[in-house]
Image (cartoon, rainbow, N blue to C red; front, side, top):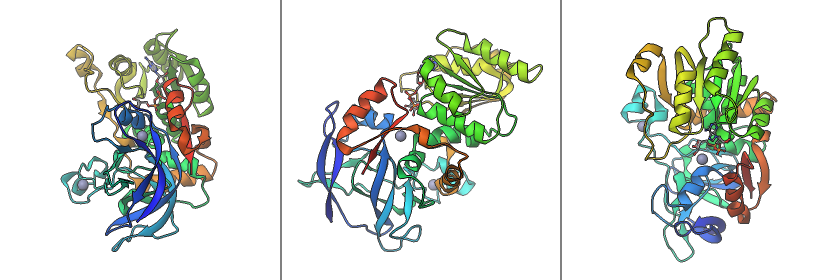
Amino acid sequence: MQQVRAVVAKAKGAPVEVVTINVPDPGPGEAVVRVQACGVCHTDLHYREGGINDDFPFLLGHEAAGIVESVGPDVTEVAPGDFVVLNWRAVCGECRACRRGDLHYCFNTHNATQKMTLEDGTQLSPALGIGAFAEKTLVAAGQCTKVDAEARPAAVGLLGCGVMAGIGAAINTGAVTRGTSVAVIGCGGVGVAAVAGSALAGASPIIAVDIDAKKLVTARRMGATHVVDSSATDPVAEIKRICAETYAGADGADVVIEAVGRPETWKQGFYARDLAGVLVLVGVPTPDMKLPDLPLIDVFGRGGALKSSWYGDCLPTRDFPMLVDLYRQGRLDLDTFVSEEVGLEDVEAAFEKMHHGDVLRSVVIL
Ligand code: APR
Ligand code: ZN
Ligand code: ZN
């Protein structure tokens, strides 16, 4: 057992605190990771607001990279000294989804080892089963994916959640490839990552839509060929116009990625698709939201597919090393997602900036 500093949400809605926690030695199938960088994600804020469940105190942080310090018995995935990106879904390999080959739909994940405690022995709930706003964290070895050790921790750690969700929504769920016309609605960290993933795949045009003009500047830098300020322009008509300009007869985009998580933007995406186009929902709706009221005949008439994208439908062992290599080759700009590097004590201020849309990601450096 060892003691480290960590960011904990002790009570619903209360500001997070930096405290000392106890990290046990790794047991069978577990690893202790010395965290080097961890991004601040909306889900951390949702936990601290009690929006996920009431299992306070939470140990926050889940977009992380670091070095494996020690491993428990029977661990073969990683070894001490490996540079790893953490994921929040160590798949079981045995459920129906795993056996069918859809490992990203494994809901039998054994990520939360839940053995870390406050100094007084109070049980911590590691948010999303990681808890990486900590100098060291105890995880399942299957949550560690070894990647190129030369990569910048702050940048590649973001593959652990939001950036992977966006890139994966495009290349995995949307199956975007060269020549695919893509529209991305909502260009925060997740949407901009979807733009970057589409660009990587050779999509064209790539139309970025947001109500906040400054988000569109970043989207363009990350590969958007067109931008639409939907606070001023009807995005559906504009997406259809741009697609028809590129591909005669097109009635919208082949793939629309919704990265806001609201019924009205989902509806825009529904109608902005070309006939038989794909709509991918990657923005996370709140539980009270309902499908927009649509004539069923429009669902029938447009065909195509209405999908959702879970963690970018990623397989960490396949996707993380590949994306880190593309980053190292200069073909995927992960550095732009790092708006600022901050300390453990700055997480609360980072929530505030996120709330105001001032950053793609604040990243805690340890
Ligand atoms: N039309 C277009 N864009 C919108 C609209 C709208 N009606 N409403 C909000 N947006 C834009 C915001 O301006 C912002 O740029 O959507 C973007 C949302 O980005 P962030 O708040 O930075 O969120 P992000 O981290 O990208 O996550 C997007 O996925 O993980 C979930 O909880 C997360 O639901 C959120 C979504
Ligand atoms: Zn499984
Ligand atoms: Zn996240």
